[in-house]
Figure (cartoon, one colour):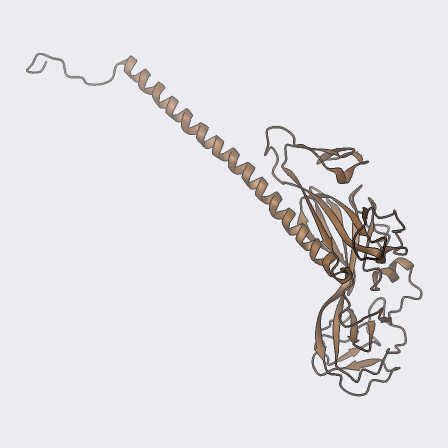
Amino acid sequence: MNQKGCFAQRGLSLIELMIAMLISLLLLGGVLQVFLSSKELYHTNTAVARVQEAGRFATEFVAFDVRQAGYKGECLGEPVNHLNLTSASADLRNAYSTSPAIQGWENSKPVIFAATEQTRADTDALIVKYAGSGLPFEPQGTHQIGGPNLGVDGSTGAFSGQIVIAANSTGCDIFQNTANQQATTFNTSGGNVTPGNRNVNWSQSYTEPLSAYILQSHIYYIRDNAGRLPSLVRKALSPSPHDEELVEGVIDMQVTYGLDKDGDRLADDYVKAGTNNLVASGEGDWNKVVSARISLLVVSPEINALEEPQVFVYPAVAGIVRDDDFATYDDGTVTIKNNRIAQVFTTTVAIRNRLP
């Protein structure tokens, strides 16, 4: 007992301890709730950011190539083609020519593909061809119209096997280079390259300055991947066919083509490949296509980013009924599985070389 006659407190009573524990649990529960909410929000925001990043990159990548379709540098008409395609199929001849500059396949794999190559079911594919960045040259030496080589005043920069367009204001030729990039001569003979060249008869003797361009021939398609999301892939056809995976998470691509029906170089209607004389072989009216409308469906790698499955209208897949690992298609309506976040990215691209 102290001097005032009161007992000194030496601890907490059981009731006080229980009240303190209850308050601590309430505070801890609040902190835990804030943590879980922040974690879920971060998970969702990450999924949204990845979808938007993948969608923007994919659309910009395809749009850049479509915009350049048909560009041939100084070549005003069709170049003289020296590639050895006489025994090749029509599909291979199409792949290594500048015409048609753009072509597509509706919900099927490109006819250029080998039998073992597959695209994702019910997705479109397209091929775009154009002359890449060119280098100016002064011709060196005498170039007979029947000669096999074309000498220039510096390293050509063209790898062995690359398809080259040589052009100036008086003519142009397309051939496969067989020399290395340090050479000062474009060679058309020898070399273990495919498809190779025929006996070259240059369209001119190239006594005037010229530019040389590497032919870009790219097929865009959607590919399934074992154990992970499908992806947008670009198959480059020069110097030899090889796949370049661009963006993972793209599960669908649909393309319609702006067709100029009256010759004013403006799109009168957007139609699908396989209709309106846009045939799979590349023949028909592909030279009347002045723009392309590309729609890409992108999903997030993260699952359970939403509380409920995402359902939305996707008119580009009207007529398609399918159920796969990532989505259910029902004639224009898509339901995304595993509560992933998804978004459709649509862009309409005018072909610069066909503008009015």
